[in-house]
Length: 435
Image 1 (cartoon, rainbow, N blue to C red):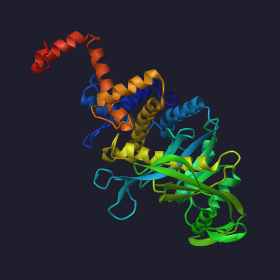
Image 2 (cartoon, rainbow, N blue to C red):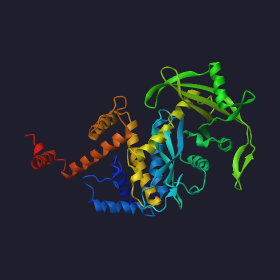
Image 3 (cartoon, helix red, strand yellow):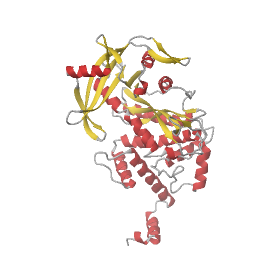
Image 4 (cartoon, rainbow, N blue to C red):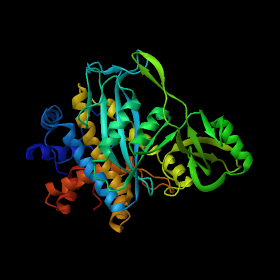
């Protein structure tokens, strides 16, 4: 994990901080966890504080190990495509009175920071590979891994084109498919992205399009396709934790309406070229064949390169970014309970915690015999049972990994002499004396 802009002492502190975040911490933990052989609590806390508040530790430097991990994973996968999922999540800090740079997110009691993430996802199996870009919006500034950072009042959709342009310089060696939820459903942006040569996959709202020469709502178009019998079942999936079947249908549509945008504070219509796109309808159906959910997907990825069932699966994998946010918030580092008093310090720690997630994801997707043995060991160290159909989860591996790291440091303290450690335990804790 090379960090060229930082001196060796800061690099070593970074590595120790990453190890201290390989843990599913309780919400009451104010800072990074301490292993057995670490420095005393106060000294470790002071070292972490200095690192997180050091202006020489730039976000551009901290994101580089994450990007290198993403590049390495893509090279190992040797896939023609890779997914870059864009999304936004609020970080709730309404009870943190020490944070003076929070913003009002929606209503007056909904305050905190806003986190923007571009997450790299394997296009072959849907595994998360790592966040490649992150922004943390606070009241005075946006702390970003990209220079220049987005403007504070910039709409979410306006943050996407610079990330698309920046991704071309990440040297991923695979065609990037930008996957975005329906917040990005905008004909003006579709035209800009298509003109720039970016491939995108966006969930659409019910809008009017041109189909077979006539204007029609997408909802009516779906009914027409159903009547024509073009839907087909393509795979089994899990929907809301239950078995389901995925159906898909595809057709060509054209977006020819003017784009709506704000100019000088007023909403205006901006004409543009007619844009042909593929409409892929993905449905999740229960065993009785009833539609439980439906997604209207628009993409400019060519049909001869990517079939419709793959488009539906790629959007299904968009959920990985929601799982990443959940891992950060409630089943891993518990970032909404961090006590850093500034967005700048919290953004640095966030990138450190993200690297701990990337390390666990790498282990989770590895299929070597050694990796399988290690995963089983970590689940045992975690001390809880897992579902048979889902033997490994990132939070469980994080929890087990911290126990393992602490155990290894303990053995180092005793020079690997287990007999000495057993004797100490039996002498001081009689219940453990097995004779």
